[in-house]
Image (cartoon, one colour):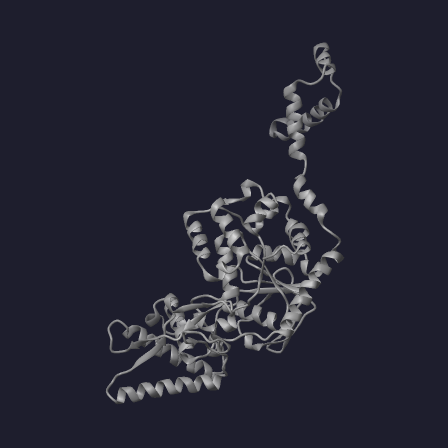
Length: 463
């Protein structure tokens, strides 16, 4: 190649020469030699020390790693927790609303087969027809799902719905549209049940977009219909799209197909929306690990955490959907496994955990089927931020909305009865700091699976 045609020969010529200059020992002047013999200047010494400090791994994180006992000893501690959960499940009978003498009457729904739900709809339609023929028009008697009609029952450790209803007449300007949507949803559900198929909430919305206008409206009326008929939403054969995933030491059948969750890769197996078609749950796990977010789930799955510490790992990728809540309760009930939760250290992480444990106010009428009581809060907790010395740059300042959410949680009955939760929430609100599970990655991408979780299991550090 000609020299004038490219800059490349310049670099070809320059690099060997530069390399030789760098490699060759350079003569030291007398002045510099004297300075070297006398020792480096103070500034130089300081810079060198700072450089070494930057290169040195975090001593506290290394110290925590050294505290870890052999896996066999940690597993022995976990097995004690497993044995206690098995014993408690075998010796005690789960309380129900009917076992309690509450001052207020409450309403609950149950799983019902397609035939009985169809009959309930037919009875409701016949009552409407008789009312119209009698000249009274028609209206729906809809259970109130307002916040004022919710009741927390400490004995059950969940939210239930009081038995209070409101009328939804077709002849009233304020309720005519809602009554029309209710009638339309009833007819659609009846058609689905007659065909013995399942549809999604999105499918339902698209059958009459002009009437529903927004999916939130058809979804809300669907819950009303479920409550009116006294059946679970699953009994209506209307499900949400797949959201939750599971991986680990679990085998089950999904509509007759055998699923081995240890062979599902890092993405896991999507939790089926039709939980009624799930059966034959088998597991040699010692506990269930409930994870708030997908990122932490993928880390645990890729590191095969469930092989080191036999467990089933579940996530709903944020706010829990009905299918994941049903699936978690099913595993807890049938396999009698303890459940440990890993959520972000912020008010919304605790809100998500409380929905799994005590239920949501929106679906309090079905809390007996959707809640999993006695979940242990493993982390990440506000006290962990200092205990594990999470760097300041990995902590986030809480917004005013975050602080309000934290204070609101402190006023909830289910939080007040748990001293550990109150202490942690108080600390969060006072320090105004929050952190995600991924903040632990500042010590290494696998710190979560290699140090944090094993240490939590070893120390039985959960609430």
